[in-house]
Length: 496
Image 1: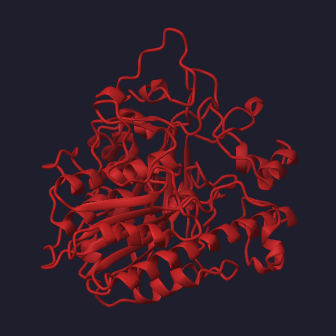
Image 2: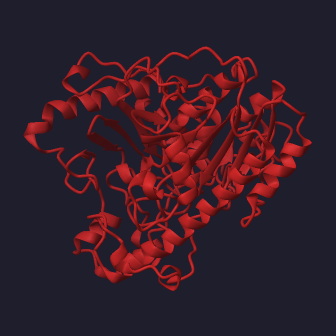
Image 3: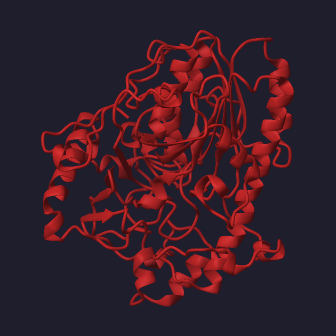
């Protein structure tokens, strides 16, 4: 992350100071990037989760690093992955701030920059989406990764092996594998069928009822995360067989939190706080560490570009907001990283009546130290979408059905679907589930004011339309998943 500075920030724990890029290594490494689809911090031993077994990820964690404070800027697939690809926050990406959008052709991805610079890039599975991405000439765009939805779910290592065989010998590469696990739908009671028990789960978040239905749904999710771990094992085996492991940075992560009520798509810590494991035998200093510094997905692109010695802007990328974290890999932190900014715009289309693709639920938030401050720009809107439309911003699941059937007076219904105040403040050290709003507590008034001003100031620096009172533009962007209303403006981004 780039620095976020405020004269009042001393009231908080630490300001955000970003380390400058370290010198590139003499021998450029390769990168294997492995990303799950909707997994929270349940990577087995790496995240202290005993009811999800991930032996392959655990092995990587022991030989590398576990980042305890990694965040996605937004908790829906398309805008989260857009931030990875561009190094920019969603609100800096026009249409691509939304879920299910048209991806503006003018925003070059780091992977496209690497390809232009002569680095061999490839991939399999889910890269970016859902939505529509085209090049300036209107042809389909795969971000120089080859991942267009195809995926050998049982043996993704075969795809990596085929890619490596086509690569020029001895040259560095970037390979992206996008799993479709643990995205819904799930096979009902697959966890029970596999021998898991509801009592295996040590803790149910406070925003859900601790019920048999919830626990069984969580066990079904666990089976999907374990399937992802098997894919990680297949990819690592293929890399080991190629002899490339020593000088390859491997990252294992997820695009955002689990597909359950009040997590995926929302603006709470559990939605944005992601699992993140990295290993690189030839490059990581003091492996086995846990990294406490905050990093964001917008920091990935500059990290990759630095490792390959490529100037992204010179290749045509827009200016990058994030900052490289190679200093953390080398255990040479050059500054303190105690802050991260997140937010959301329109998630699923037509969840709220209004423009052709429906209204969004705009929010921005800042995590600083243990405090998580949220500013909801339209508290009159329903955060999950309108009730009469079925709360479309939360996908179907047994957990959602249980929450809906509990009724509006039930606190768990309110946690999942209820309207939210303009400001929310949580102490995640004592309230990790973000269920106790401290915004009106006089004891936190000073810190809330600092966070509010720090967030506002940084968003202005990033030219966020919301900070300039021009945020309605996000609601006007069209979507290929919504029929264009008669007379609606033509979408031009696909042609730029």
